[in-house]
Image (cartoon, rainbow, N blue to C red):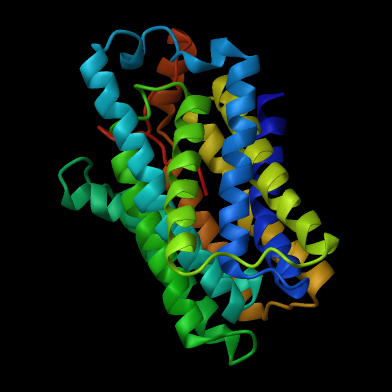
Length: 324
């Protein structure tokens, strides 16, 4: 059941780029897409917390259950900042890139972020670069190069690729910062705060720039609802439910299914096509992510014996897509 929930989450997240393309075709602007997505997701997650009060509390044994009120207030402020600054920026870069390039290629470039997280963690002294991780970094770098070279001008846009990579870098920073609060707040509460922060920033930007055009037709609203409900709320809740049952490493490995779903849906619905070189590069990127998440057999044995997940990386939690 846990694996199925993680795969459901990956499929929902993977569909977001395709939903975004279809929303653009229906006349939705990137600004309207972002504001409605985060605003609607924040409202829906707020309703979930109101109807399920137990989801507001961190799991037993987490830091969030024993922190003084002042420290908990700082944690809440950091969570809001993650959305207001980090995720609002990342999502803006992502959907700006989506205007310029194919959804499948965007997904493959964005999915370099787990490698970037590992490099940053090593440089910050929060992890060490083992031979296994070094091999994964080489594979991911070669895969990204194949993806870019294999585009051959079809569906490739230099500025779009730059924006996509900037989104990956921003998401890397987001993960490293969120690692400091992820164990201090309940997952659904953390996600709701991130969505609220992002919606607040985008709403303020809309006011400053003269508002957002919401005059598009029902098809635009349909795809926006799909992004908010399927690719945000359902995706996050399914992931957290799967994470609880499988542990972080298994959940992270299963989440590598996301760009595969994006590429498949883009081929089926948008007429996009990946070249053989791009497919090979994508396979290398996905393989590198899987290698980074795998743990030695001893760690898995200790986890089975204790009944609790063992962190895959010293001092760094798994990069969980709390918000995307």
